[in-house]
Each structure stands twice: as structure tokens, then as C-alpha cells.
Length: 282
Ligand code: CAA
Ligand code: NAD
Image (cartoon, protein in one colour):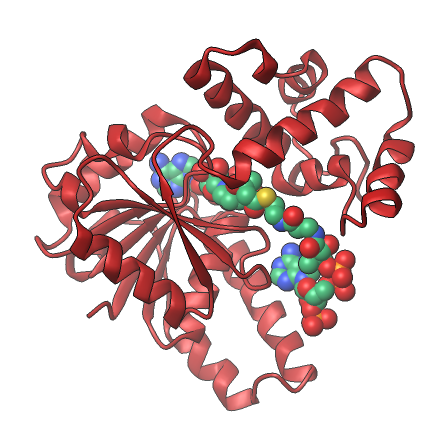
């Protein structure tokens, strides 16, 4: 039974994951190496819960109870009595491996270690631990409180028991799980990211403006957001890292990241989270 969870990384995904876990009645540590990220995450959860109360989806009492189940953390030692850790740090293999190695030494033997990676190999992350059978991909979509899908990804050594527990948890969180094998980008980003990358190429080649590319996909294909708005929303660093994983993993030039995407990331234009990407914010 999963009752206590630690979420590592309090960025946009970690905060959302912590929120849905707390709303489902789990005890949750929201952890980040940066204290201000934890505070920002808790504030954004507070705002979203407040909105849920205003909209009549939750009572004030339920909001307070949910917030009481959330504990800020800046020490990974807080994972010492957790049943599950969900990692949502930056999309870099070496960072994730270091986090998993440390967690392997801290968490109880029965604990499952899950990663919210968008594209990286679960098998490789799992191999850095002494419990690869209890390591799994649990890939939520952004914004987590709204989007129903969770991709559940088995690494080569993930046990059936681990898979079933995480599949069940996704349902408890009100999500719809799909089962995916461990290949670069899994299903969602293998299909989504090349579309976003192609949208960036159309701007790079001067085919159309940022606004007109987005309008084409919004009004022409009924997408809720244009691909460049979506790229800014996801984070251009995350988009680039995913394209690099696809490019390297499939060794196919069709996945080459657009030079303009690389340049924006080099400039620190990471999208909505830094105030500038394809659009400017505030
Ligand atoms: N966090 C939490 N809730 C949010 C939110 C956010 N960032 N943004 C919007 N919402 C909520 C709003 O509060 C609102 O709920 P209520 O009005 O009922 O309170 C609801 O979502 C609808 O919001 P809006 O009316 O303001 O705007 P909208 O109708 O345009 O919907 C959206 C916003 C749901 C984000 C919609 O634009 C959308 O679906 N966009 C596409 C999102 C998408 O494709 N996500 C997947 C990204 S890829 C990924 O996640 C995988 C990866 O690895 C990169
Ligand atoms: P983000 O940049 O918003 O947040 C990452 C957080 O991790 C930051 O607060 C950072 O301080 C923290 N962090 C970095 N290294 C850490 C460490 N060693 N220990 C503790 N905290 C650390 O990123 P995000 O958009 O939330 O993405 C996080 C993960 O979720 C990535 O793997 C990404 O691919 C995946 N993901 C992102 C999206 C999306 O749309 N952004 C969707 C699904 C999955």
C-alpha cells in the first residue's frame, strides 16, 4: 500500500504531481534542492486549490486538509520512510542517475522509485540502483492536475508487481494509465516532439511567423494550443533534451533538433518559465 510519497523536483511537473497525490489522500513531501522552488511550488498548489474551491469542486475544509498533507523538503533524507518516490528533476540522465543512486541508499527496501522522465531510458536509470525491479517510469502530462494521461513505462527489469502497484496508483489519482515499453520518447513524446520541432523549423526557414504557425494548428487542426505556445509551456530546454534523446536513441536524422531551438536554449529563453521563448510573458 502506497501511503507516503516524496516528489523530487518542485518545478511545474513536481508541484502538479504533489498536488494530485495530496488530493488523493497521500502524505506528500515536496522536495527540491532549492528552497525557493519548494515555496513557489506550494504557492502555486495553494492558488489552484483556491480556484477549485471557488468553482465548487472542493470545500474549504478539503483544501486545508490537502495542504496539511503536503510537507516541504530540502533534504532527500525525508524519503527514509516513504513507500514511493516520484522523481521530476531536469531531463538529464546524469542528474537523474545521481538522484536515484542517493535515493536507493535512503529509502526503505520496499519503496518504489518512479521517474517522470519524458524520454530517457528507464532501464539505464534503474541499473544505477540495487532494486531495478522496483524502478519504473510514471510519465504525467502537463498541466498535471488537468491532463488525464499517465504513461507507465517498464524498464527491462521492472517487475510485474511494481507495474501493477503504479498502474493502480495512477487510477487512484484519477488518471488513465497506458502501458508503454522502454523506447526513446515512449509514445507521447515520440509523436508530439517531432511536430513541435517541425513547427520550429517552419519559423526558422521563414515559412511563416510564430503566430501564423500556431494559428494554423489551432484553427486548422483544433489543437488546444499552437505547437510553439505548447513548446513555451513545456519548456524549450525540456523540448531540446527530448529531441536529443530521440536523435541519439534512433540514430535517425529526422529527429535532429532545429538550430533555432538550440539557440533559444543557449540564450536562456526557455519559454514561459523564464519569461521568454517564442513569445514574451509579462
Ligand atoms: N495548471 C493547472 N491547471 C491549469 C493550468 C495549469 N498550468 N492551466 C489551466 N489550468 C486549468 C484551469 O484552471 C481551468 O480549470 P477551471 O477553469 O475549471 O478551474 C482549465 O485548466 C482550463 O483552463 P483555461 O480555461 O484557462 O484554458 P484552456 O481551456 O485553454 O485550457 C489547457 C488550458 C488545459 C492547458 C489547454 O490549453 C490544453 O490542453 N493545452 C495542451 C496541453 C498539452 O498538450 N499538454 C501536454 C504537454 S506534453 C507533456 O506534458 C509531456 C512531456 O513530457 C513534455
Ligand atoms: P522544471 O525546470 O520546471 O523543474 C525542475 C526542478 O528540479 C527545478 O525546481 C530544479 O531546482 C529541480 N532540481 C534539479 N536538479 C535537482 C536535484 N538534483 N535534486 C532536487 N531537485 C532538483 O522542469 P519540469 O518541466 O517540471 O520537468 C521535470 C521533469 O518532468 C523532466 O524530466 C521533464 O522531462 C519531465 N516532464 C516535463 C513535462 C513538461 O511539460 N514540462 C511534461 C512531462 C514530463
